[in-house]
Length: 209
Image (cartoon, rainbow, N blue to C red; front, side, top):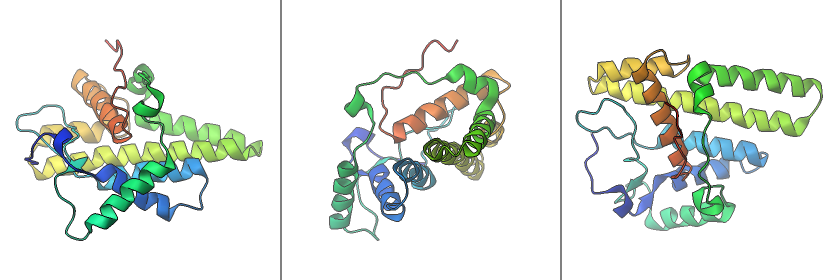
């Protein structure tokens, strides 16, 4: 369990650090791929935070920290933030958006449904030799697989904390469409948390009821 002061009061943003690690590693890749790998890197590495008594898992507790890693100097930490800001981003501040994700479709076909749709579309555009769309769809697939793996990270951590009920639900929604109200709520909330890793703090939940 993470115990710390409010997230907005913390100094070091680990989302920026891990994004920059990916930017460096994939600097020669097309921009959509580089950004997708950054998204993947963040979801693979940010700490996960649970609250006592919660029934729906997912929080922003691990995004920011009061201190840097013992293996990371303050100079390198500040440098990574500058690199992150230099790349430019499509976050809430840059677009002032209140976009609404397609939650009805997500709840109908699940993450695996989106993966299958993207794979089918990629195959069609490969046949047409439309390189730009193939690359774009590859970036989508990277993000979808990263999202699936992120949910499974939460499931594994929940198991370690003996939160067996939550872990079971998380494993169920990592692929197929949810079948119960709690599964649906968990998938919607986890999607919302993932948007927040991209600094999309004002993504709308809409009238999903």
